[in-house]
Image (tube, rainbow, N blue to C red; front, side):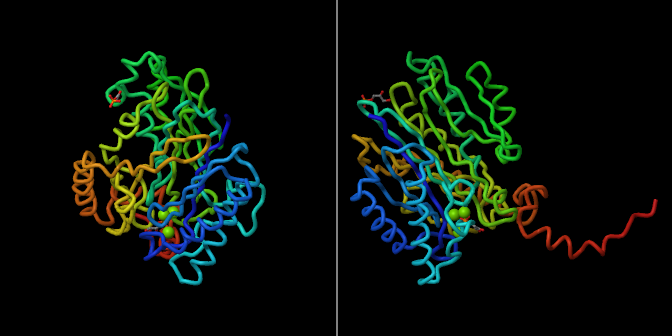
Length: 365
Ligand code: 13P
Ligand code: 13P
Ligand code: MG
Ligand code: MG
Ligand code: MG
C-alpha cells in the first residue's frame, strides 16, 4: 500500500557545544512520537541523532508536506528546545528560525526529506544523515550511486537498471529546477551539480518516474540571511531491485569527499562515514560526519535500523579522512581550507571587514 517516509531534522541544542545531542532530547522526542503513533497519526517512528542534529524518522499514510505531520515535528522540536533550555544546552532552538508554525516546516529551519512510495514486497531503504556540512553534500555520492558504472555495477549488468536514471536538480539561489537523464546527459548534469553550494540533487527517479532518492536542500543561511549554523542535510535512498544494491549505495562513501562545513560552517573538510556512536564531531567541530541507517519497511513499520557504516570495510575511508583532515587543518585560516570570500558573506566576516573599511588607502599610480 501507499505510504510516506518522512525524515525531519533540526538542531535544537548541542551537548557539549555543537558536538552531540543530549539523551534527554531523544527521550522527549520518543515520548511525543509514541503518543502520535497511539493516536494513529504515525505508522511508526525512529528517533536518532547525528552530531547535534535531532532526527525524526516517520512513516505515515499522509502525503509529503502534510500539515499534521509537519506540525507534529515542529511541536516535537519546540518541546525538545524547552528541555534544551532547562539543561542550558548549547544553542537551544538553534534551527527553529520562525516563531510560530505555519502550514509546513519548509523555510522555517528544519531540514526535510520525504517520499511517498508503493511499498514493494521487500523495501530496503537507507537514511543518510550528516552533521557539520551543507545541503549539496549528497551531490557526489548520488551521482556515483545512480550514474557511475565504476561505482554501481548494476548500471551495466542489471537489466532493471540498464536504462539509467533521472536527476532533479534545484538551483537554490534562483529557486528553479531542471531534470537530467543519465547516462545520456551526464556531462550536462555535472556542469551544475559539481557546484554543490548552489545546485543540489533534490531527487532521483527511474526513467518510468518511480522515486529512488530524495534529499533535504534547505540552506539555512539563505532563509536567515546570515550564518546560523550548517544545514546538516539528510537523504533517503531506496535499494535493490530497480535501484542500486545496498552495497552500491554505500560505496561512494569510501571516498571521504571534500564538503563545506566543519568549524563555524566556514571550512572545507572531508566527510567521514561513521557508526552512530561516532557521530560526535569534536575535532575542530568535525571533521563532518555521515551516518547511514538501513531499514526494511514492513507495512510501514521500520524494521531496524542497521548501523551500516559500523563495518570495518569503512576503516580505510576513515583513515584517509583523518589524513586529509590533517593536511587541510594545517592551512589554518587560508583558502582553500577556509571557504572563499563569497561563501564567507554568510558568516560574521563581513562585520570584521566593515570595521576595517576606513583603513583601506588607494594605491598611487
Ligand atoms: P547473496 O548471495 O548474499 O544474497 O548476494 C546477492 C547479491 O547480489 C549481493 O550483491
Ligand atoms: P551546527 O550547524 O552543527 O550547529 O554547527 C555549527 C558550528 O558553527 C560548528 O562549528
Ligand atoms: Mg549546533
Ligand atoms: Mg549540526
Ligand atoms: Mg546545523
